[in-house]
Amino acid sequence: MNLTTIDASSNHLHGIIPPTLGGLSRLERLHLGRNQFVREIPATIGNLSSLVELDLSGNYFMGEIPATLGNLSRLDSLLLHTNELYGSIPPSLGKCPLDKLNLASNHLTGEVPKEILSIPTLSIFINVSNNSLVGSLPSELGNLKSIETIDVSNNRLSGEIPGSITGCQVLQNLYVQRNFFRGRIDAFDQLKGLRVLDISSNNFSGHIPDLLGRLRGMTYLNLSFNDLDGEVPEDGIFGNASAFSVVGNSKLCGGIPELRLPSCTSQNKSSSVKLIAITSVVGGILCVTFLISLLVARHRIRKSSRLSCYLMRQRAAQEGLLC
Image (cartoon, rainbow, N blue to C red; front, top):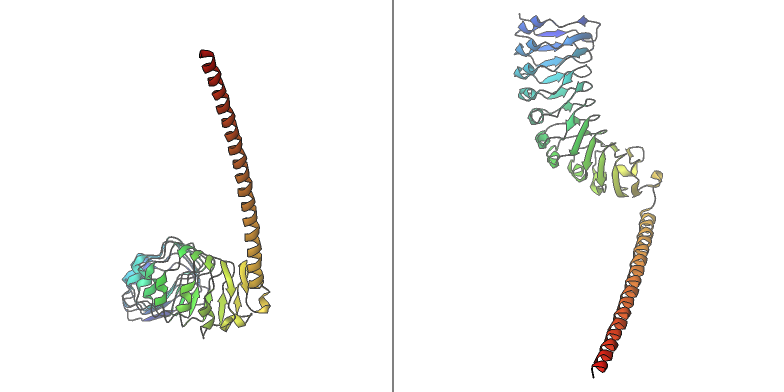
C-alpha cells in the first residue's frame, strides 16, 4: 500500500490492467507504456488520488477515456497516445493540473472540449493529432498562455483559427496541417516565439504577412497546399528555400528565384490582359445591344408616323365627303 512508482514500460506485457490497481492510494507514477495491454482502461484508476504521472501509451487499449480520470487532482502528465481509444475527449480532464497531454493516434471523435484548453497549467504540450476530431477550435485556445507546443494536425477540424491564439505568446511549435481550416493567417505573425509553423493542406486564403518572415526564431514554415495569393516575402526564413514551403498555392508570385514562381509584374500584366479582354467583350455586347435597341425604336417611330399620316388622310377624306 506504500508503493509510489510502477514502471514496467517497454516490455511485452499483455492482458488487462486489473481494476484492483485502483486501490494503491499512494501511487504517484504509473508507467505501462509500449506494451501489449488490451481492453478498456479501468475506471478505478480515477481513485489513485496521489497520481502525478500516467503513461499508458503504445498499447492496444480500446473503449472510451474514463471520465473518472478527471478526479486526479494532482495529475500533471497524461499520455494515452497510440492506442485504439474511441469516443469523445471527456471535459472532466479539464480539472486535472496537467502540463503534458497526449491523446494522439487514436480514434477519438467529437470536438476539442473548451475545458481542456482552459487548463492554466498546460505549459509543455497538448497533442490530439491523428484522430477524427471535428468542429472549430474554441476561443479558449488563447488561455494557453504558457504552452510551448500545440498539435491538432490530421483531424477534420474546420472554421477559422480563433484570433485569441495571439494570447499564446510562449508558443514555439504549432501544427494544424491536414484539416479543413480556412480564413486569413494574419494572426500568426504576432506569435513572437514561433519556431515551427505548419498550416499545410488546409483552406487558408489571403496574403502572406510580411512580418511572418521576420520572426527571429523561426526554423521551419510550411504554408503549402492552401489558397494563398499575392507576393511571397523574401526576408527572414523566406530567404532560405530549404526551411519553408509554399507549393500548391497557384495564386502566389515573386519570392526568391529558387521558388520559380511567376514575377508579380507578369502576373499583374496577365490579370490586366484578362480584365481588358473581359471588358472588351462586355463593351461589345453592350454596343450591339444599344444599336439593336436604337434600330427597333427608329422602326417603331416610323411605323407610328405612317399610321398617324394615314389616319389624318382618312379623316380629311371623310370631312370632304361630309361637305
